[in-house]
Image (cartoon, rainbow, N blue to C red; front, side, top):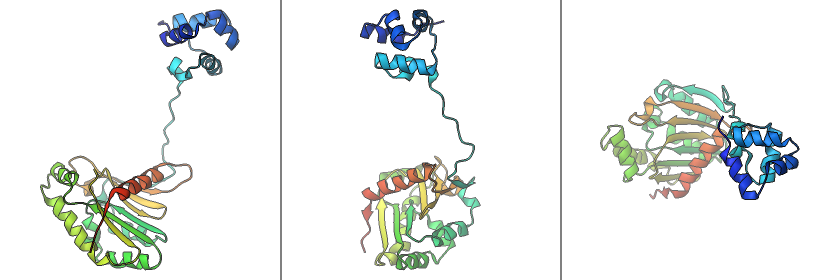
Length: 247
């Protein structure tokens, strides 16, 4: 069995002998010898005491004591998972937006499918804003190199840039509506986000695949989860760097 060189070095740096560390921890000196020379691993409580005496991190000295965090079979935040966006009826998006009372957020490049499949989208967003809901629309900057690169990766050529410009034309009637804010961003878009209060639909992006062929997960905020807040914070980060669309 290989010795524990990290433990040996830590003891040497602090001038610790086998006997001295054993006395400090409350074990037999032969136990310390086994740790150092043969790679023995103490019980966790004992290891913590030894690490504290040596002023080191327990897992640095004994990596084997680091227990992997068990994976959850299902996250409490995951309401539904769709293999690809094309599997979702647009009504799923519209029902989500219709449920909003305080906040609606879009983080997309274009997302033309919403306007194309639901011509009343602008009317719905206007109604929500008039009812006191804050509506934030963040679409792609057609002149951004990241947008152009996405088009190349999806083999759309300049198509995605045209879609970004068309998206702005769709939202143009909302530019003077109080409560509706429209900005453009040039970030690398890893996921599209459609949020309504404490729910959101997250459309993953897969290299070389159009968004309609990529998975979508429906998240609901939960006290025991971190996924929803992570995506919400990513929206805020992009929004803070985005440019306001002028009339």
